[in-house]
Image (cartoon, rainbow, N blue to C red; front, side, top):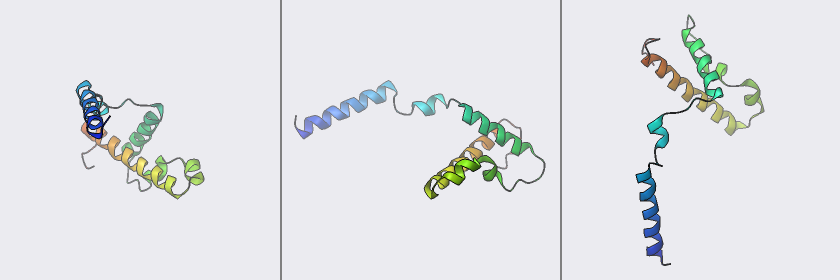
Length: 103
């Protein structure tokens, strides 16, 4: 099989995947919540509904044992994931009207 035939075959398969809806499926259907997501969501709701200003949100969301045992790259990943989840859930809560939209 020549390079040109191989490229055409790859393009044909990619087109079939696009037509079948394999790309972007997660965005179209939304996310399923796992148990871990539900626990994180509940923690964030509790933090948001708390009176006063909370300054250690990420520290409250990141598992302390996992953070202590992780190397530097893993720690960054834990913090960034917690921050992204916090932002996403806070925006969801704001859309539902439970808090002011000052996200």
